[in-house]
Image (cartoon, rainbow, N blue to C red; front, side, top):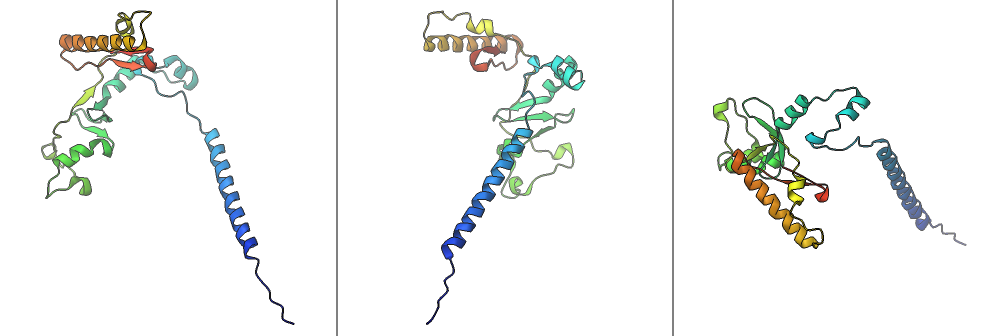
Length: 197
């Protein structure tokens, strides 16, 4: 009589699947626990609404108006939607590669692929100027919520309210630009709860 031994392939496979499942489950639980331990602290604040007293009380750091003004004037917005910061008095800006990529491509040539090879300017005269680049600096913030909402009619439907607000925002932008010579933008905050110029 011959006896044939078969390896229990289904059981071995089941154990491997079960072990992989348990490993994934453990990693998921560890990630969730780590996420609970790491929590954000109060979010982002516009400089004109910064919680100075809360920071002073919690961290013992006095945030002055001069400090906030310095941060505000050091930050820039690129016309392609990116942000950056001044890092020199001569106007040198620091930003992420994806923000500068369009400019990098425009100043590259067949002989100089700056996207692939990078670029270093040994002196200011070697720097490349970005065509079509506009950089905005936030000089001042004014609450214009009352002006934006003054032409709304209480019984108006949503479309009419939005139309009145958009017209008011365009008027405020235009008046500001005419009086200051600067670019002016009314910004919607808190889903229309506040409007800043």
